[in-house]
Length: 313
Image (cartoon, rainbow, N blue to C red; front, side):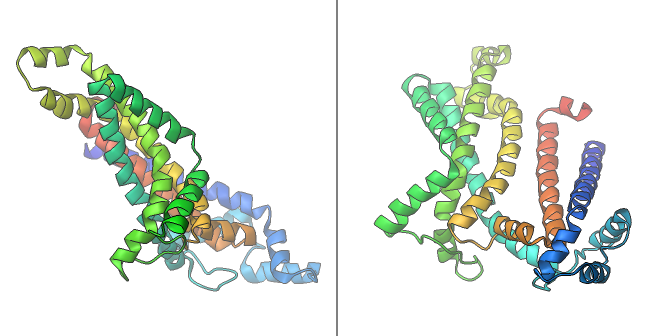
């Protein structure tokens, strides 16, 4: 298991380096435009060259990237071109806002999606049809529409929750919980739909297998068969779907953060892209890639624990 984890981690690190390298190469194509944007419409070729030299953007691109990488592995992601703040702490602070929403949405998705999927597979009939209908509806509805409807109903009409803003959990846990309820629901709906469909299909396949019939003939209780045996074997595909949903939530967080005026990772990355703030863009890329790699590694390890055959691949 240790060697399996080591292989997966090494693959993830290689992927992170490749993604950051490609990102830097693409950004290098716009260095002149970025510098002109900082200097304004009165920029001259001489002033552009001078600022590029001042920022270190006049050197060979590969040398610039290797210099950035050597600092990044030590936790130094540079200074923002526009705010002059250290990139690492700034990205981490905004990422904590996004992750407080995404992680809670992920937990809600797992709890509701697995429960609905298991119920649909084991009960059948009206329960199954209702779960499938709810899953299809949730899958088709866009996050933005869900967010707007929830704001209108829960925040504006019923005045139960705040419409915008974010309170850190360390400042006031109750207000933090209230500030993330609507964003969490908006993010979780599509993930619940996907997980419900995946768990339902996998559970139906597992419950038809020979080992389930054998367990039943031996008098093992249905509850034990479903939760201890069938659900464990059906968890692999569901975990894969969950990893995709997590990545989707990170992307959907940009929309949610914009709607609810949250100072999160997505809006920070979007603003930096508009400004051409290279250090922030690179810092955001690193954090995003490490998050994705970490989630995929966790899923691979859990799959390897659930299914030892997966460790051979």
